[in-house]
Length: 120
Image 1 (cartoon, helix red, strand yellow):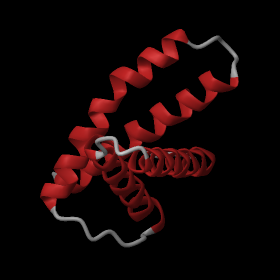
Image 2 (cartoon, one colour):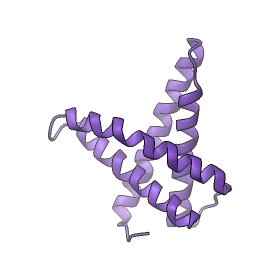
Image 3 (tube, rainbow, N blue to C red):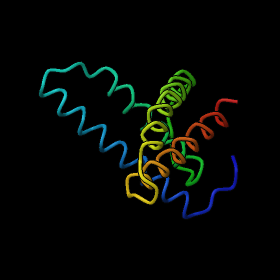
């Protein structure tokens, strides 16, 4: 995995933690409303695995995921890019939303890279 500065590591971890909180809130609301939660659960699991893998690579933290879980997480995370990039394209230059999306894209790219490194 490429050398990632300490600041970028911290930013990426915070971004993924924020994404997980958003997904947990969405899951809670959807559950209360009786909506189908399959997709949100899948995304939550994938982003959680991505975070665990980054923490494993950067901080030698534990990760207990089998190859199938890692492969599925990679696929789900990669599937998030088109919608995030679409939102990014619509956001205004210099806006807080654009900054958040830039950080999220970078964090998810690093998570995919870390998963690739673990599975090869």
